[in-house]
Amino acid sequence: MSLDTYTEHSPLNPANIEEIECEPQTELEAQQEWNMELCAKITLAKNQLKYCIEIAEQGTNTLLLNNLLKIKL
Image (cartoon, rainbow, N blue to C red; front, side):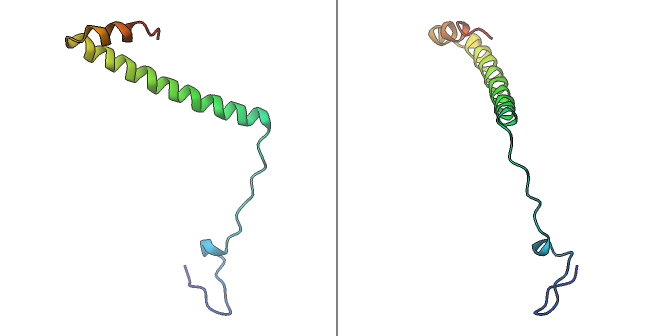
């Protein structure tokens, strides 16, 4: 990649490449993206809860275990 000079600008230089503007999302697309992010967060939370239940089953904290088991996965 050649460097830019005062009079010449390299078209390969990332600073000289115009950014492609994306079309704004429709409301449906935005909602679908939000739903996918929410599903990913819920999956992570479910896995974390399963892990907490496994830990609680090994320990003596029955109050924690009982409350974790009330959560329906």
